[in-house]
Structures are given as C-alpha cells and as structure tokens.
Image (cartoon, rainbow, N blue to C red; front, side, top):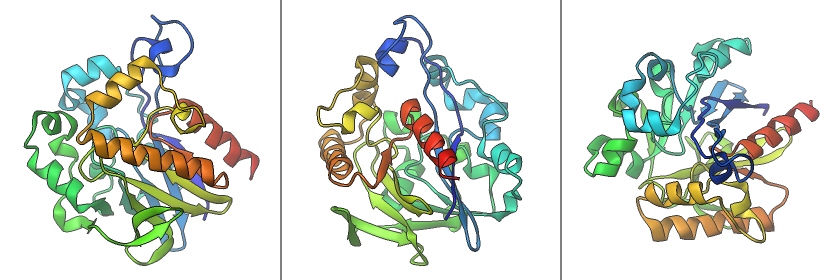
Length: 277
C-alpha cells in the first residue's frame, strides 16, 4: 500500500529549545500533526486528522487557552480535506478514519469526511462523549466528535504484533492495518501499524512526543516533558506503554516508529518516502 505522510496542523508555541530541543529558548517551536493517507484497493484511509476546516473557521472552539499556548498556524492548505484534493484524490474516496485518540489536534478531520467510518477504541469514544473531567472537557471538542452510528469501536483482546498485545485488524478486513491499544495519554489511546509498500510503519500517536524518547538513552526537552505529564489520563499506564513502544523501536529496526507531533520524525518519514519512489 502506498502511504502519504501529511502534516495536518502546524503548531508554533514559544520556547523552541524547550520544545524542539535546539535553538533559541525564546523563539517559536515547530510541532506537526503527523497524519497518514493510505491508498487501499477499495479507497483511502486516513490515520489521524489534525485540525479540520471547521477548526480553522472557528478556532475559539479549540479553547482560547490552547490556541494561545499552541499557537496553531491555521493554514488552509493543511487540513486533510485540502491535502486529499491537492494530491488529486476525490475526498469521497476516504472510506476510513483511523484515530489514535480523539484529542482536538487529532480528530479535526471527522466532520470533514462525514461519510467515512471512524475506527476508534471503545474506551476513547466513551471518554470523549462523557467529558466528565476537567481534562476531558479541555481535550475533546464536541463539534469534532463522531456520531456513534458511524463508528467501528474496538475493545480489549486481540492478537500480538511485535510484542504488543490486544492488536486488532481494521474491521477484520484489512490485515495490513492494525489498531494497537496504548492507553495512558487518554483512556482509549491507540497506535496504528501499517504495512506499507516499503515496510511497516507504526504511528504511536501521543504515547510519546519526542524522537529521543525511543532511543537507547531516552530524553525529552523540558517543555514537552511538562506537557506530557499535564496531558496524562493515566500516568502509570502511559509510562508502561511508552516503555513498550521504545522496546518495539529498539528490537525491530525494520519498523519505522514515530509519534504524532515530532517534526524531526515527520521530516525523516517524508524524505524516506520520497526517496523510495
């Protein structure tokens, strides 16, 4: 399967050195919303969707504090809908939205593709619909959330893939697309494994934030460390699953592992995909 790496939302918070690990401590950082557009025999699938057209039209719905802190670029060329068209595809061919979780900077695509089936963990959908805690009310935007009638939800249990448990194939139809439970950042957070035409890719969502976290000597800039902790729904589970993702990356160098917002990993993935074509 051919896979396109898309940045569906650039964020430019202050404190570049404390976010990206290098540069001016007072400068603007760069974070991305790393999405995958996958060409399937029966259409297209989108893994995560950053910010959508509705978010750009009404950024206040994302929360004024989040907009001030994250400083999203709000570029009309970045939403997945615009990029699908720019690549020459018909948006109606996007049949599946596979979401690592429903945070506001991952689920913006949902209203832009109302005909697509949304694949998400059952615990994540329940948490997003309930919004029972202050953290959930900040992270889940009601206008982005899918109607449960268009969702395919996944529970516990499944197969094992590269040492990770509870893995389920997309709709039990596409064995090359796998939903991998990695709770902690959110209640139903998952990773997505994709068997592309150039090997396995593993989109680890927000199970980690910085490429240095999955190296032999894990490290993360101070600002991202603070944000990671502040966003935890279940810190022990997040830490345990982060360790599992790191173990996957170290034990299986044939799998390209990346997170949702790291610009270094995104740029490397784009370059690798371009070089392979």
